[in-house]
Image (cartoon, rainbow, N blue to C red; front, side):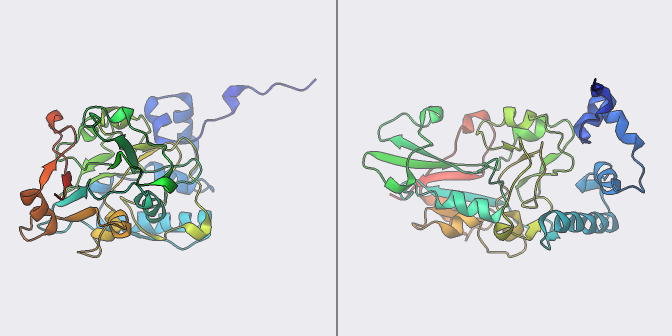
Length: 310
């Protein structure tokens, strides 16, 4: 008769969440010898918060991560930690009178930011509405599964929704481990190594902008983007939350460079720039167009502005 294996002898996957929950599985992680093949797991688990690391500690972490990613994905990675640019507060504009619902922005974002193909993760949701619909208050009633091959459809208009990069982000307030915060340039970021997957931030976000990795992210090797940022598009882990970061790996390292979704838009509906620069295009649009922000009555102060060109 085959002996039944006790479930207690099968340790759960080592995660920060298990440890913080105080379970037996979490306590068992303390028994991992640093000299074993699990040393990198130990180091990742106990590494400091991004904002608390010294330059030397950060360099060591980046070196370890690049080695781990290279082994896992068979590709060399460059993980940057570029800080916020001085005198910069990023803002985004979207011309609803131009958007044709083609979803090219969605797919460009997926490629640039190493989003999982299976399970599928998209940071941008493009919503289709019938003209005359009370769409500002009824976003949930929009059609997000329309056929992108048949756009623009007569009698309809399109509204992409993604992270609004709030100046007063409710997602940040609820995070129990401070894994998410707002940077000086206005970008709300996540330290994936500190995320415990509680999803409080997802519940707090009024825009449905955050995504949870229910499974191990899958990305074809030939589609990997090895140019990454620690707080942005580096490959994520199962059990953590992620979202749009205005392509932090692009806009910080190349001032004046646009996020991938802005660059790909075939009709020029997407705008991006520095809100603190009075000569920037985004400032001109805010000051001269009919502009509104989603759910601004919630006092989230989004830095994502919708407008009409006419």
